[in-house]
Length: 236
Image (cartoon, rainbow, N blue to C red; front, side, top):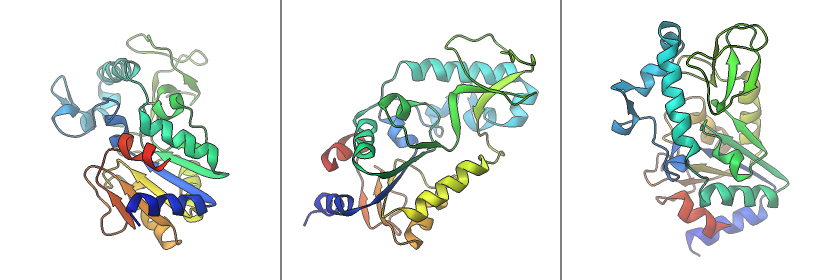
């Protein structure tokens, strides 16, 4: 039995599927990853801009970076891997997609049972009253809240910030309940998501990693060193 067939049989028998997606699946749509040379913008490292301290120091610079990212993302489309996950969601009664990505491509593809662990670049949150709003494509250099006129920030979990406790609890529960877990395009270094596969494995899940540069070789039951947009449609 080849590896794809083995995974298909596991999925066919599964009552619950949990998926964790990372930057790799978005990179296949042409969105640059956070790290490396492609993560540089105007000589700034992404890690130096995605922090509360950077926003307090120079909110206009941080917003300029996010506007650049939003413009880039708006030109990209969900790929075959995004579409394949939508198909899997429709076939299983218990399905949870946990994504570390903030680009909104999963939602545009049609995913609904989803936890956006690190937020969404198309939402804003008021630094004053906390109100969350969907953001328009065009924004002023420093957008303000329509309710209290406070400064708006991207609704993103920045470095040094904790993820939403409700999102974390739901994610951990989905990992513990999974019969099968797919881990797609994630480096496995950013917590808390880096521990999710271990949580699922300890609870008895069958772990499948899909990543051109695997990071879970010692943990996963099946490892595919392939692009998700190529492999996932074959599995579906």
